[in-house]
Image (cartoon, helix red, strand yellow):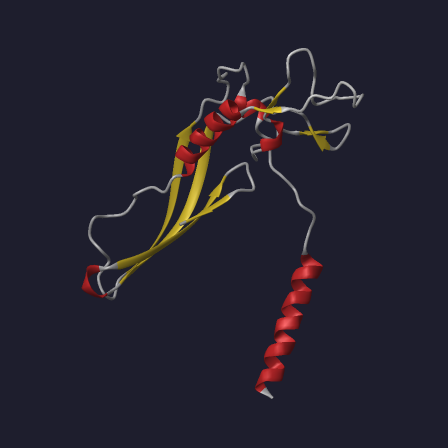
Length: 174
């Protein structure tokens, strides 16, 4: 009888998740890696009308590298905890906020403003779709984190953290 209840609960949970699922959405500062491309000289690889003149897009790895290094710096785990453990019976729950400045209007060696090109931007009200570039990327990334720490025997400690990056749909954990 108990197993039957668990199976019913599992199927009910799955049905609830499927019914309550919503369509995917993005925020203005969400990364868009497929926009990082360079056109071969004399062509535009984004708007090819003839297969005879088709030239493949070249990946813009410099812009990608610049944006990802700044994003990685911003979301790297912080060390907002004391040098001492919470002790064997100790438990700590904290809410943290960190702010990282990024070069929102910087141009790399390819002439690309990588935060403008590499993030979603606002929705165009006429087409109800995201524009091709983000005209106004944030210059400060805000990360809000909930961190839990639990003390263990012999001075060890286990820590977990879940964070949210404001103005995006990105989450961090460690």
